[in-house]
Length: 425
Image 1 (cartoon, helix red, strand yellow):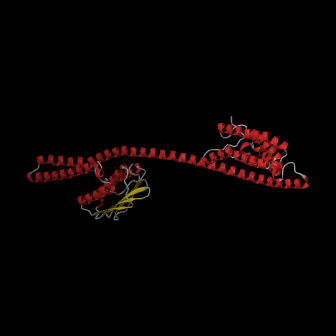
Image 2 (cartoon, helix red, strand yellow; image 1 turned 120 degrees about the horizontal axis):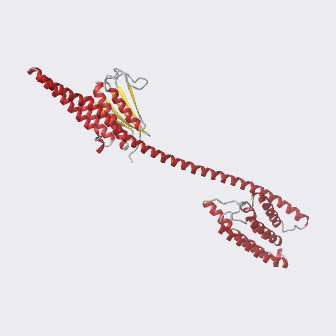
Image 3 (cartoon, one colour; image 1 turned 90 degrees about the horizontal axis):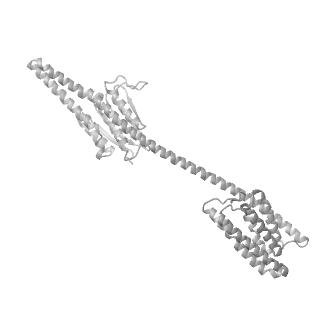
């Protein structure tokens, strides 16, 4: 059973040290007090007092052993602390009455009153200990003569002051301990909440990347459908039209239509090869994103006949595959827009690694176009130009990023995509 009036030691190494001290410190103090009392017995005690001191000392030692065993078995807060404190204090006072040197053992009352007594009785225990100690230091109880009483009163006042100091110090120490425990508990709760938040963020992040992958597949299907309709289907329709017209055409017109059909077939073949190349980010299978972008930029420059430069800023880091694929797709779509609509003479591609995000900038000095209107739709553009911008924005937004476009007619275009920097693994 636990005594509600006894102060718990708490936990941790300091609490273990404190319990060990209060378990074992009484024994050396008792042994020292008994030794001093034995050595000074003839000078300070009568034969009758010596005969009485032996059983009282044995009782004091037996009570101390009983309490040590009980508190060790029951742990901190064992019941019966008040009883032990009163019995020990009474035996120590009686032994000090017989021999003032036994006050060495009585000093224990100062150290464990707050541990053994309920808060309302701590003062009584401390005052009783102060009376015993003042009597011991003034030559024994009762004081002899007026000078003895004066000395006893002076020493008692000193001990009362000491009691006040110790009591105030103990209360402040207990208050600090409670505040530290509350702070530690709050830090523990905060760490638990932080760990939970990090786990939730990791789950949300994984879910976001999964959704981005799934949405990317759908976007690729829509993009290919649009490109097949806008390029391959129209090219094939033109070829069929030209070939059908040769049936009723003369020799010269037939040759022209056949040549036009061949031109349309070559253009459709080039578009088909480009679509197949863009179908999967094969450039990322062997190379990291910076090298893949450099190769893509160089290949585009060679095919389009437009000088293009690629650069990297910041320390490059291995990116999550979805992040790398998204940025590579955006770069490909931006370069395709430049080739189709910009009529540029120079292009620059920059990949920038920052603390928590990575950005891709594609700039050209081409014809530009009218910036977006308030609802976000490009206006005054060549047919098909807005589809590419919407595709880029859609890709970036799936990764909690965005795409910004700076342009004006005749002043070129700058496309800037920013997404969170998510490292591989």
